[in-house]
Figure 1 (cartoon, helix red, strand yellow):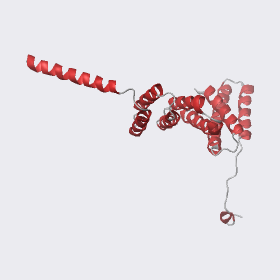
Figure 2 (cartoon, rainbow, N blue to C red):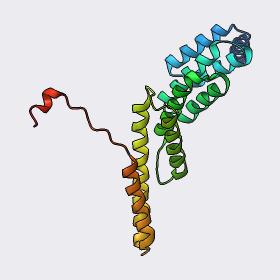
Figure 3 (cartoon, rainbow, N blue to C red):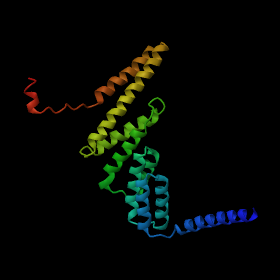
Figure 4 (tube, rainbow, N blue to C red):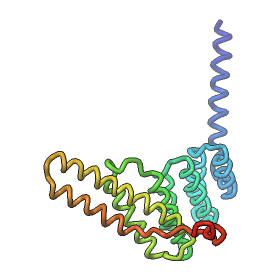
Length: 213
């Protein structure tokens, strides 16, 4: 019995030290090693492992040219996994450290998407919604001819419709309380929202129009 117990303990120790040795080997690697690990873990859906490899890449190779691309890969991977806070973190880090005038448009677009998909409840996230609308308006004003403008405009409309719904809910609360002036104020805001949304008419091909004249 003692012999069996001894063998079991020795096996456990061997496994433990083997794992420790393996773990100790995972440092002081070339930048490309960590970068390939990031890609591998992203492909496997293990974003925690990918984040860990990124931390190693960043700490061991702070000036590596692979860092910017790794940040954007992880930002997109976390967005695909609906982990929007982490996606925004990587976008912000990239923007602070590597962005140029040429990619400001794209980075702004990514953050707008992260805000849009991360938005859950207009009634609980009012400040977030108003801030997101303001950021979108600034983005459209700054990059009016952007290739991403149609997507940003779509998100803008969705947020404005959410604001419209919020105002209607608040107006209904004031109605139940008999505060007609406050109710009318919020309903009038909805009218401003509708007038402020620029709706572009759909393009109808000529061969469709000839059957509808």
